[in-house]
Image (cartoon, rainbow, N blue to C red; front, top):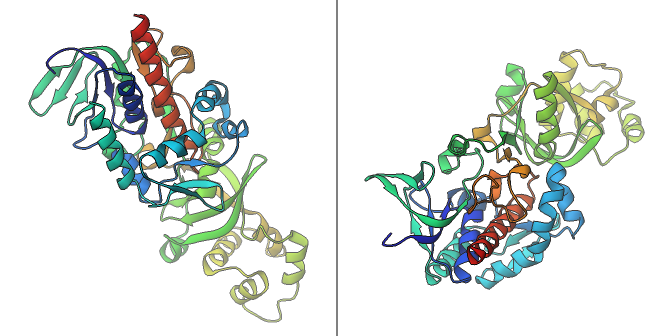
Length: 395
C-alpha cells in the first residue's frame, strides 16, 4: 500500500466483508487481507446448501438461539436484525424467500450471485482485496513473495473459528494474540461417533433418517439425521451438539434417545405393534409402525445389544444412542469458543489492544444452524466496523 490505511480488515468472510463495507461507506480507506486465493470461501460452501442467511423468528426471542452469549449478542443483533439483513441482501439485487421452517434464503438458493454483487459494491466503495496475505501478528503478513508490512490506523480481525480449515479459518490466530483470554475452540453443529456394527455400517452408512426427534438432558429436537460410517450427523443432532459435546467432555460417552416416530404417541404405537401374526420382525415394524429400512436396522441393532424385545413401542419411541465423541472440529459446521466477551468493549474493541476490533466466529458464541450463524457474523461485522469508525473519529 502506498500510504497507511485507515483500517485493515483481516479475514474476507461475511463478518470481515460487512465490516469493510460499513467502514468504507463512512468514508474510510479500507483494505481486506485474506490468506486464501479468493474471498469468502466458507460462505460459498454454505451456499451449496441454499445459503440460509437468517431466520424469521421475531426479536427478542431470536437471540435465545445464542444461549450463554445471548446477553452480549442481543444489542448487536437488535442493531442489525434479520429485517436489516434481508433489506441489505435485496439491495444487492438478490430477493429472498422464507421457507416453511422460518429459514430465510436468497431466491437464487446459492451464494455466488450475492457475493459477486457484494464484491462489486465493495470495489465501488474503494475497498482493496489482498489475497494470499496470511496474518502473522501486528502489521506483518506472509505472502508468496515474502513477508510484508501493512500499517493501518485501526484493524478489524475477522479470522473465523477453526471449522473447515481448508477454506481459510484454522484458528491459528489464537497464538497471535498473547494475553487475550480465549475460550478453547471446540466443534459446534457437528456429528458424533457411534460404534455401529459392521452390518449396520455396511448397509446404512449415508442413509438419511427423516422425521425423527432426538432427546438429551430434557431437550428434544425434531428434524432429520443421517447415519455415517462412524456415527450420526444432521440437523436434529446439530441442534443438540453443544450440550452433547459438553457432557462428553465432562464425563465421557453419553446416551441420547432417538424417537423414530415422533408423530405418534407411544400407547397408539404399542397398540399397532401388539399383534405380530407370524410376520418377521422387519415386516412387522414396516407394516405396523411404518418404519423405513434404516430405522428397522437401528431397532434390530438395539435388540442385538440387549434391548427389551417385549417393548418394541418403547424402543421405537426412545432408541438409545451411545455417543462416544464429537466429530473433529475440522469436520464441524462451526466452532464454539473464541475470544472471551470480557476482553472486548461494547464496540467489540479489544481492551488490551486499542484500535483492534474483532468480529464473527472469533468471539465466544455458538448458534444452531437455521440462519442464526450468518446473522451473528453479519451483525458483529457491522458492529466492529461502526466501532472502528467511531474510534478513529474520536482518535
